[in-house]
Length: 267
Image (tube, rainbow, N blue to C red):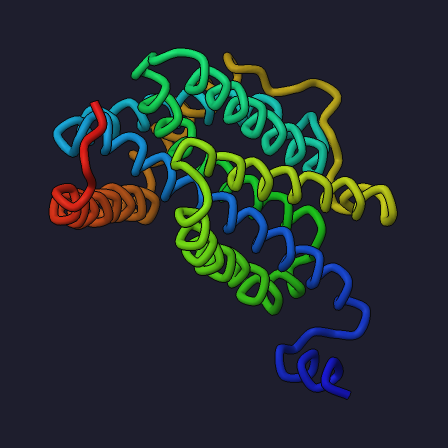
């Protein structure tokens, strides 16, 4: 009775409950992982380097996103969305585990900015691929109704990560809390594997016979720039996004500056 009431209230049709619950659960796990990653890597970075290095990290993040975006664009039409999701998640988890091993075995300070860049890059990459992944499993009318419900999973996971980090600080050292990040990521990968083993591949994805390689991605960027110059609407959207990024990072730097003095430096 309660299940039917919730489904009716949220406009979830009976044959959509499975997909909705799956994607909501996946978004919660990825939101949890991103929350863990953000909190842990920022603290590790700020305790070793401080806020004065953040502008440099933001520039390196932009460069990292450009490179990963080109690579992602070259394979997204070749690899099935669920398989690419597993590759992204497991690869990220493997890098985190490798970083943890290096932290335990040596005092190389560059590990901390590398982890910070990993978190910032994968945060945006996961966000892009999750939406593409959903679009390959739900048709347009389903996406309009179910996307707000599914996207709420990111916020739910973020809130859960805050609670988890608070509890984790009582029993774990900061570097060992990286395992919380790894656990959330691998849980998401296992969920993706279980779902698609049981229900098959994404129904709306059709792989291209010939992939778009990095050279083709660069060509697509040139075409996009050319089209932007001719389209006032697209140009306005690009400028809006540009200033939105500035509006996002400016208060973030100010907030980090305000709290930086509360974090003891560990040099």
